[in-house]
Image (tube, rainbow, N blue to C red; front, side, top):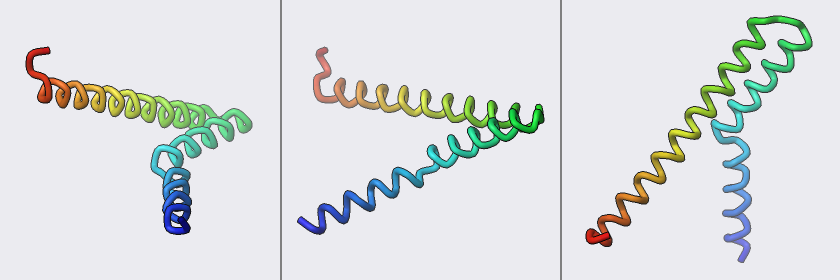
Amino acid sequence: MDKDKERQEISLLGRFLSMEVLLVLMGALSLVSGILAADWVRIASGLAIIAALLVYLMRRKRRSVTSSDLEAKKRNPDA
């Protein structure tokens, strides 16, 4: 049981330190600091980082749906 709990903690830590979370933090911090300093370059870079991350996540989700559809067709070619 202790190994399972340790594995879950490592998995949770991996999720917190994932690239997506770090990009969201970087984009949000850039956006907030740009707003506070009234710096349009930082605001634009924060928005660009967040927009690029959203596009990446949507494409990854669409790709996973497409691959699961292909697997379903392989299992049942008549459908």
